[in-house]
Length: 48
Ligand SMILES: [Zn+2]
Ligand SMILES: [Zn+2]
Image (cartoon, rainbow, N blue to C red; front, side):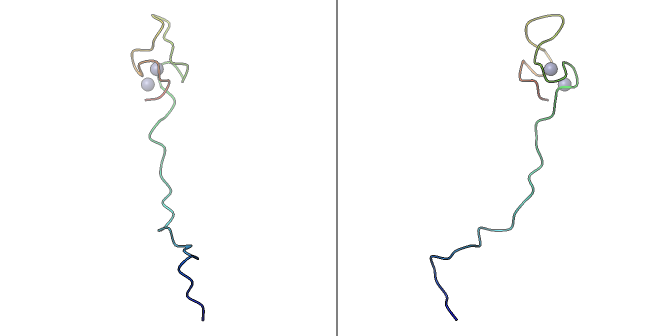
């Protein structure tokens, strides 16, 4: 029974973090709006 402290394989439970960013529903992820250079919905990020 070896309790090696270096063999720390437990970094906590793997939490499946859901992506907070989604493709903008306004520009479709391009970040560019047809009205201007920057999508006003995602501020040019392409995600909202
Ligand atoms: Zn959007
Ligand atoms: Zn957008």
